[in-house]
Image (spheres, rainbow, N blue to C red):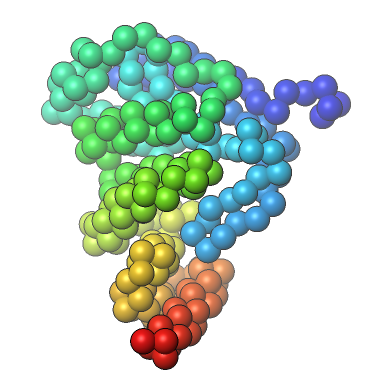
Amino acid sequence: MTMDMSPTFERHIQCAYCKYHYTTTKVRSRFIRPVSTDTLFFTVYEQAEINPILYHVHVCPACGYAANDQFSKTIPSHTRKTIEHNITNKWTNQDYSGKRSYEVAIRTFKLCIVTALLKEEKPVVLAGLYLRTAWLYRYLEEPRQVERFMRLALNMYEKSYVVDDLNDPKMTPLKVLYLIGEIHRRLGHEKEAIKNFSKVIEKKKLFIDPKVVEMARDQWQLTRREMKKDFTVS
């Protein structure tokens, strides 16, 4: 039965901004086959074209309002005019349903980032968009863009830890701290990385997230080894 089934399906969406009904493509869970996931949650899939991140964002073809499932359900009245002026008044009908390439997926993410900024979404939502955009650029092997979006993600995760109410079990305070530490590590900021990994370990009794604590401990040890190696070489 699976052999005859398409790996994707159409999901019906009603635009939160203009109320237009449209469809967006999603990948069926049974076809999502990860091969590996690294310490920044970047996942390689068995088939590159069957990657759920490609379809993470939905874009209204009528008005250009782009969103993901993490967006708040309401649009504050004071942001509607801003969205209208910067997106919908400039939009020409474009349909992002159907199969997406990595380049097209990046365009949808950038539209979503603009929408999120104008809508004043929570920093944790923007951080996730920036990080996933960095992942997409990793698939395309564009390191400068990867670094650019990792820096943007880092800034928003740091802001999120301070101002957001992190009550989503998929995005706990410990996970945000871990991501801050791991992005710092990858950007070469070893001291900041160690500081944030240490915070995860110190706060492990306040939040139940044993996998993240274990990852933080592993990355803390790795960063310490890297620092000692760099000191020895210099």
